[in-house]
Length: 114
Length: 98
Length: 200
Image (tube, rainbow over all chains, first blue to last red):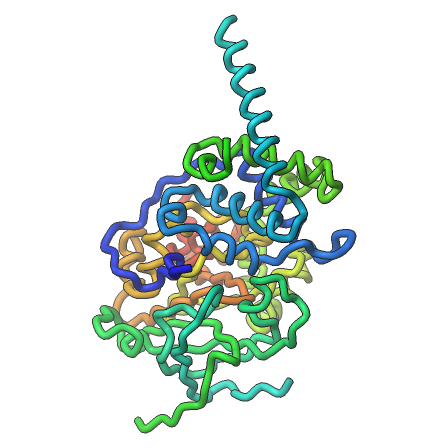
């Protein structure tokens, strides 16, 4: 962990970018997932803390930190923390991701044929 | 836990080697400021970040720093300040010789 | 496709779906709870913060309580900010406050909703604490040297709301009309609240 997130006062003269992207539904769901997983009132108690979310984000490489979007970083951190705790298994997630991508491609091909 | 520092007291942020998650930014380490308020008691982020939720709470302070003391090249008014929340285990007393 | 590869393509939407499906199947979360969480966040908007500001302008007792304990005072208005620990900092003719989170993007989300992209940018996070006046100038806000600029870095458990100054020509306005003048940017500290004679 090289502290590439610790940005206060680091030299840049670049102007603050003012563009605003329209938040996407999957991003809102990532936000909601974080609230649910870290809710102390959930049955069995919180599965993670905001501190673990931050630590997961800070553990990304400098390139990933820079290239991934804001909620992509959240998502990767949530996955890493849940995998760490054995709530999900990486192999199961990889398999499910492949299935979801495959279904997505089939759907796109089908639509392209109309 | 009785707070070690009181509002108005001058403190210095420790400048120590750390591994892993911390919430004390590098730019403020070693700097001196004044306690503006005690925010309450909270658990250490260094512990919470690794799933250790049951530790002791400790006082969290808002510390006010003079910008011209934080940045040698600061452009602004002499009275401009920077307020940062610092956990007690990151602070020590400092003698103000000014 | 391995997780390593997935990190660099843009199909985060599919990754989110795969992750959520596994969590739902394991009974960790439900789709209904995720939807409810999304719906709740849509209800968190700057209009809530604007109500707090307008009440503080019109009610000196409320303002004093707000500055003393932000969370408790917001609770008086029936606004549910969950476990948010709010510190309200007041702008005066001699003092201007600016909020940032250099380490990530901490923001009073339960009161104002999601932060704008610029607040989360590398540029804002690195420059706001070091050259606040230059950053404010970019936002069109030019402060004289006679005004002290105070920057708050939300490094820990507190979240911050700027109580902007009440503009001129608002004496005849109702609390709701005052609230309509208050912008999110004024509550972060990169803007002042416009006088109605400039807005209307």
